[in-house]
Length: 252
Image 1: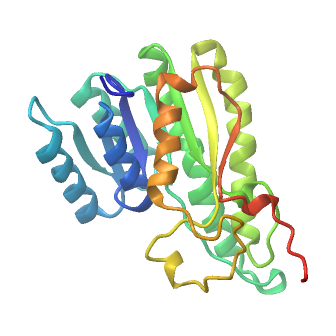
Image 2 (image 1 turned 180 degrees about the vertical axis):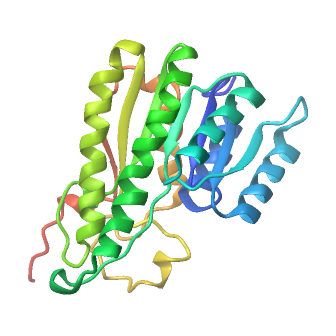
């Protein structure tokens, strides 16, 4: 038996990187997934791949175009999950973007973009999904924050603010939804190896474990939080950063 047997999971930003690795690992553990993204070709290809590999007794994955700033897209994604797989147990709010700039020159449009995608997007996802998760008898909401949702970093003001906001939203939602049997937790990755982050200088962020994380290492936490193994965890931060947030740089 899989750790996520009989779970139906909706993933935003699910076509690649952490979202894609999580979709693969969740399906391998018995879940069915709805992959939401704006990357239509990549999302469709991943759903087809998962159905080909695991769908010997029926499809295990669907792709849906999901702009997380759109109420309509969120409602359609939730409806698809319920129509195709009968219910919704887990929401994984994973979609996110980054921009940055010096405080004095940081444009309001860039600030607003951070809040729209990284904070309002997860809020809209929770709002659209909660009734379906309650109808399924409870479940789990997982929000991808960041270590920047636990500290401050120069030149990343919009990102830091959006991720701190998501950390707080996670806690308020956890308190409100606990009576309905819905757990709400935040994930806080540090530097994770992706095609984008691999372009950064290796020593940009000191990591005590000496390397960036792998997307599969974050996905393992997603599986844990989606499964019943985390049944007594809510309103909590799960940090996956190789010790980064604990490190205080010192001179030799």
